[in-house]
Length: 91
Picture: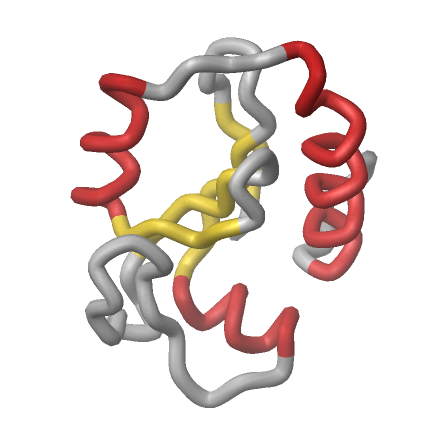
């Protein structure tokens, strides 16, 4: 089940590839960093500031060096709200 997770100041949604596929109406889910096709049951992370979905390995790697910038907050919030609604989360 999709859920917002704690990631410092970043807005991140943890969800399975299947949940994302259903939310966007596609039959495949690729990690936006490594381009690997993900198993529908695989858990990944929608990173709103990037507007990308990463597999677990790429997310953990990104998180180590990620830096939050206040000037990105408006578009990050807009992206988060767009996908949160489609994934059944309250905003």
